[in-house]
Length: 146
Image 1 (cartoon, rainbow, N blue to C red):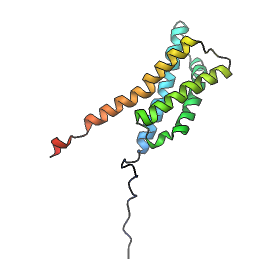
Image 2: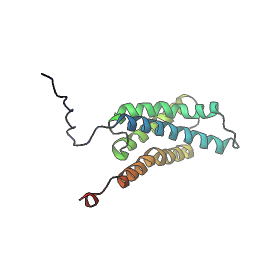
Image 3: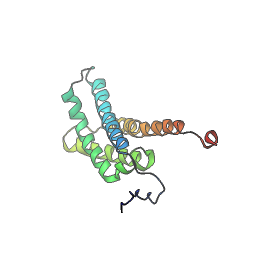
Image 4: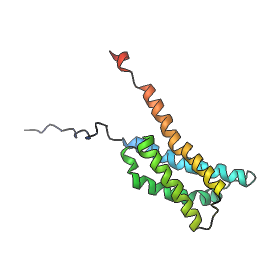
């Protein structure tokens, strides 16, 4: 007798698990967001001179904090969720990034903290909100399929 393959049970929440593609895209988008933040900030304070080394120095504490945020929130379970994943990842990235900058002797002036907090909120949570809107518009509505 041959056994029929069984599909795994649906999660208790009723949501489908995140696809590997979604996880990779979310991770790439988050890393790109932090690198963009670092590059724009560096360009605005270095008379437009941006080098990979400079971007790396600015971004490093935030990238480490981003990785911790992903681990802390188990972001791979719902990588596209703005509230469940985006907000906690953003908070850990900002707080950990500022702590890292302080420990590395880099600047943590109040204006920088404010700008970094707002910019990273817009980037890390914003792309998730846009993604949800786009994904929602692509799904056929119940009335269109009935």
